[in-house]
Length: 101
Image (cartoon, rainbow, N blue to C red; front, top):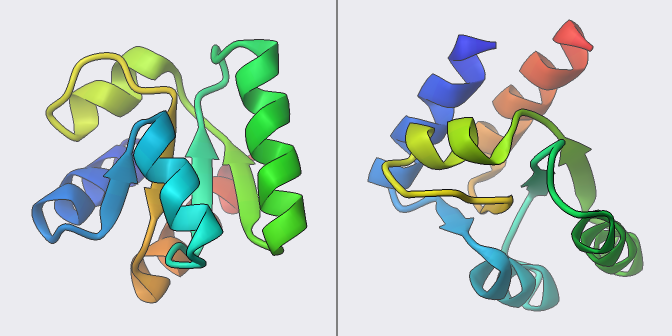
């Protein structure tokens, strides 16, 4: 699973990620993202809100990792949602997460 965190680190350097609730919602509504990653330890309401939003916009929503590791991998504090805005990066992350689950 460390590969996923490494890819997130590369994604933030390439400006292909939108971390945080507000930026994530904006990327979904503008259809700029390929997938959304929600932390496993995010609140029930946060998970529900993003899953519903992603379903409405036909964007894949993945539940992975915890808030501290997600935030640490991108050089931030605690992050519960990240929108992946690069198609190839999103595909690679989805494949890694699905392969390990």
